[in-house]
Image (tube, rainbow, N blue to C red; front, side, top):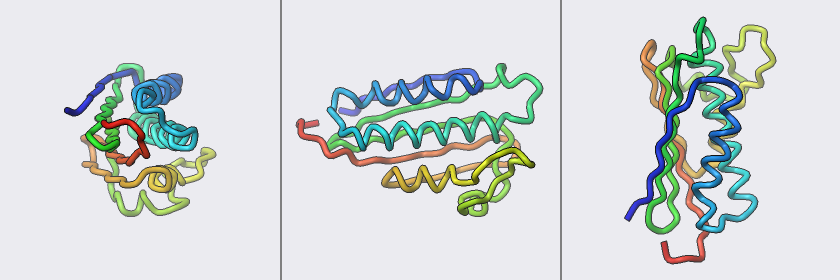
Length: 148
């Protein structure tokens, strides 16, 4: 049986740490390695930050916007994390996934968000529609000892 956690939070920068902590707490019963936990937290940080900064950054009142996170633990240690926003969307997902690409407009952005997510997770899928938002689905296979 799958174990699922869903949450919604305001698109505020301070909630990025909350999302990291929630994802970490969700996987803790499986006793992940420190490396696995760090990779999950970092990938969640990047996805949530992208939603807040790029999805909703142009809004006058981003606190009225929401980021949605769903974590699903499947049998055998398969973790699926979905981060969704209803922001501006990404015009060219493939271009956005290229290392060093950023829409930061002079801000200090590395353009490495998707690259980091992809390197720390086993699978990364990005769906986006201009003007409707973006969904990032990340999959990680945990090396678990228990029989989940």
